[in-house]
Length: 414
Image: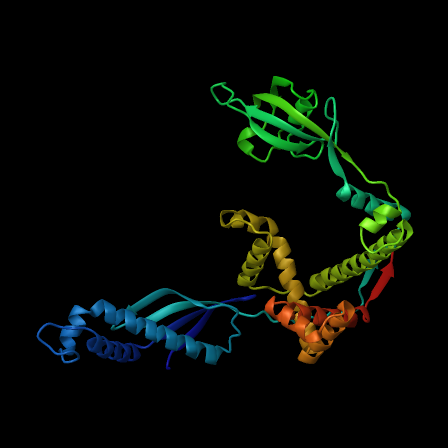
């Protein structure tokens, strides 16, 4: 297609191209559109497709122009791609479209392209790997959490203490001062499930008692309209329960799984914590290294990819549609870092031939199947059905890239 292309903006991942189609080509496109429309419409007094073209153009001029413009823009877009060699990351958009018999067709094409990533500095960095030691205190904390999970609530006498589970009827005064019928709540005192002033109010009551007292809402309350307000609150305490924790002994260990003794359970907990500490320390070192590489190798990223990453986070965290805008503003920086991280890893993997192959994925599935004492074919099918094979392929590639990077940089132990 004989068109004129002028670059009006070329910054980072953004391209804007002014495209001009000559009048002769516009006339040809309009004629073809008129022929197509003539075959599709019915004109009284004429058989389908036999009405004079002049009559068709007069009655269906807008339809013809729209078809001609759409066809010309599609054809021009294909020509632009071929001539400009654009590596697009999203569908481009035509803006400021001008169309006429004498002027021809002109529009500005807005595009986002894959950024050029040179990565000239990938070695010579020095990062600190956090300690991965597991202490006796950490093991005890994990055992205590396990006891907490196995605890049972039993009725308690007297007023509630911090950590107790209460059943309470709460009601807050309306704007006119009337207090409606209360609503039942189950709250753990000290767990932040109610504002501190209401917890303090509840903890003054014994089961069966009712009190009405003004309560001031905190200045950092999520609902800005309620911050700092003082309202009359009625509270009726129905029940107090206190958690009883099981003894930390051999019997408890047997309840937690295939453990013969508390010593065996403790050993497994220590081993799990140690493996997790190593993973977290490695992840922290890798994050530091990538941050250094990003800072040393700046490049622009397509805004569309950032928006897609925000959307992925929103879906993962199940953010309501009406809150995605605010959510996106809050995590935009994190989304940008993740996009840059992925681009860097992909670029290195491609340049150094480190990307996982189908055989690598098959071998990894076989390894996982052996650890789980299951059939490799069944595990593969299960991962495929769940859409997890791509994730597995990605993890293999990333592991190879990080191994390549760690061999070229200094990792110091804290």
